Image 1 (tube, rainbow, N blue to C red):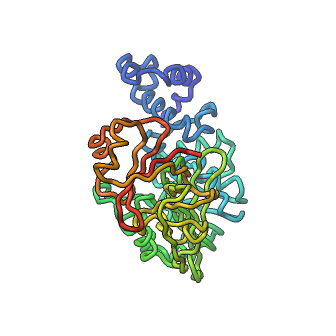
Image 2: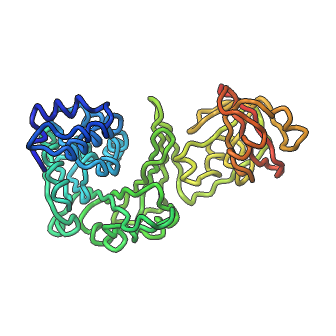
Length: 387
């Protein structure tokens, strides 16, 4: 950690070059003997990544930014606040502290917060930033699993990282470091509750098989992109797992809650007046029958995951007015040739790209075309507009 980066003239240079071509800045070289241009470039790149993701870090003077990869791997402020809101006040240990975003927000409502990070450089940078942010957090450097062997906490938080990045989309928690599956009993002996953050790529059914005593599973999305899965575990078993999906979009987050494994039965119908498209968190949950039952709306097909109704209901996703249903055949499709619309497919044999090319549909406009399969197994296009 080169503390010369925090010198006023270096900070002024970094801020002055935030919106300039980074390649040009690098080729110009460093005007400071005590700071290399590569260090300046890393500060610029990392700070730029924080502008929308971590505005507090971006706006606070004298923050020392970690390598850009650490910023990419960190939680956003939105998701960190959400995690902090899930936990009761008390003592907390973050065993995989990283850039410290989650830990900072945990400290807002905990009497004592401990940050542990195995990377000495990242730990030193984060310790400095906690002091700048005036966060009362105890910092330790080393292996989080080992450092808590004599302690007991109300909450332990852990964000295991994948060891093998070349594997396919479906992976196991036992592929991660630390191996929380292997250490689960030990971790639960050291706390009242365990909160595990995993990648959205983790298969939910695989996670449930590997873990025990899961009380809640939270699927967290921001602007319709799933960012993380949160597994809240306690030493005692739970009769059922509470499933919570949330999508932070605009001022009002979209929530849906159900019980995993609870009996739910969907109803089915042909397209009516309104079309409902679940948000990304709801899609990740797979709770499609529960959605139909909870909102009293009908699915278009068992595998289409689109819903319809004659009335408008508050729904965690996008809502459209269906203006016309066009059967997918040459005769009916003539009216769509050379039109302009946003094209999407759900349970349909052709991709959106192929369909746009085949029917000469241009991107844009006020119409939304949903190519899908209906409950009578017919293929159709739903011509929709936003309400």
